[in-house]
Image (cartoon, rainbow, N blue to C red):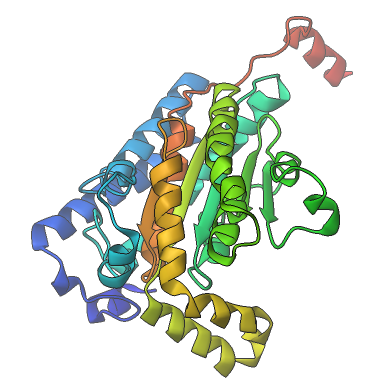
Length: 345
């Protein structure tokens, strides 16, 4: 998107729709972050490089008038059904437009890629740190696009993506967490779940495939599972992409109008849509029972896809930054001068 498109408002909201001071603040923060990102690799020392990377990340966070980790974290009193009906098209905390959002994602993804390499290097050297991202949302809420855009500069080595569907016969023969535990990220890795163990609570809640005592009992099991996971060194980011019924309708129609998207459409999506209110109620209970200090839920408005991608990018980058990692040193038995001599031979 070029500057002319930005001025004309093409591809997003016209910037006249945001305050002049807010636009200046957003532009200034991203300009400074971009300059610092370009200077990271020119640093003379590892410490300076890490400091510049952290500072550039802080400048990107300054784009937000209120951090998503605060603004979008679920708290009691937030009603999912109301949010989907009236707030799914809003962009809370971000005063820019689509142009700014896309620029933010691009700059943020470079920081994510840098921290991802740092996480992986520490994992190789024995650190237990790793990260799990849980993506949930109604059909066509944009879960797949999140992965493509947020990790656009990431290294496939170190990222593991897994989509959970209906349990297979083998999976159903084990406890409901069995298939989840098999897909957890290894030390140094980032795991992304497109749907998750929460399907094993929501689906029986709505369709009655298990007795109520069974699926309700899973709340405590999940909370203990996530608490232990976090205690073992795995950070957890749980995101629910909040879309409106109208936005979902538009995306379903777009799939029916485009032969290259037929593969995305399934009649079962319409069955779920018919029970929209049931899904809202079931997920509301999930948030109330499983949003914990160790693994909080974030409810992210997703009608404006650039916004939801920017939010996830911010949550991911700041989580990695806050791990306060440094590059692993040479192992004690390695003599760098000796190694250089052997390489010179």
